Image (cartoon, helix red, strand yellow):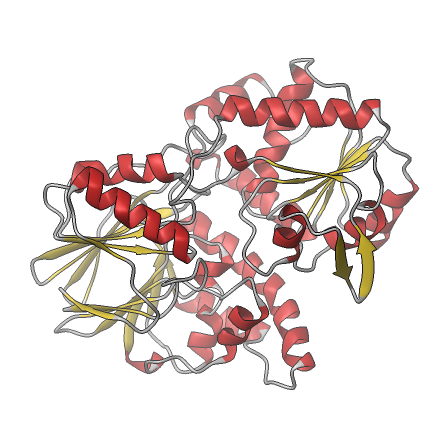
Length: 448
């Protein structure tokens, strides 16, 4: 029995782990490479295995860096089953259809064939089966159980059992006390663990600190008659921000100000959120009992159509604009950035991970001149970052999550992080848990 690392190894995105047993081959995740142009080119490379030989794919969650190459897998011959929680399937369909248009434009620019089309997504959905948390699924001698990862709605830790061995795949683990989603579930024992390390070398500020920073920025935006731009991922981060701003307004901590959700995808995903209230945490459900919604408030405007998006420019400051993409790699946010990052009274706030090479990372790292849609733009606005709004666990929580398993673990594979982040977490694991921890590279194979 062995694991081969075909993505998410030495890089944050592209999660794709092949587990080979006596009975066949299985995949955990099949994600899109994101970030630098080099990483994006990797998406068009042939799979290093035959998709037709894969018995089943188990998906940790809907984010595109974990699902984005599934339609290509189907296009290239996969005909097995895909398993994930009900919210994950519904979210993934929207995310995959949204990314298809972006990928098609990229393929056209580079004179390549499309990665996949909408028909491939439809065929994928026909193969996709919904499974609930804690209900084991058996496929060709392999037993798989999903537990709540607390990262986004429906996100999962995958427990893979075969040939007397138990392997745990963390997927992406959630941050402390994130709103709406439940807390990350513990796993008490395993032989091997594949753990993410996006923030493996750092600690987040607390939820209260993050909310306090957001409160101050909204107040400053109103006072200075400025524009607060927030590049946000359509999935989870946008809904979290709506929830938090709603709370600040209802508690009288910030003045009312126009808030625009300028992302058709985020708007569609928010509707799916409302469908799965049974997956909300206790606090969110308690609040829902006292009012109709936790994902809306006076002054919130959803701009679905292009004309509505353009009309945001006609609204005088102060205003708050939340738009995709989360790393400023396309999407409606770049139009607002081109218009507003040069204004000294304006602020751009990053609330999620910014991959190396992305426009968001350039701004966050202090670039004074950036290129947006071929145009050189001077950055004079204030640049802020709140890591506490990340949906990823930090180093402390990753170690805490691993601790109940440490006595039974033979080895931990540290993945889904930049080199420094993964290396730092591996060292911390060895020091604090006394378990062998390695950072695999793409193509590495581990015999269990």
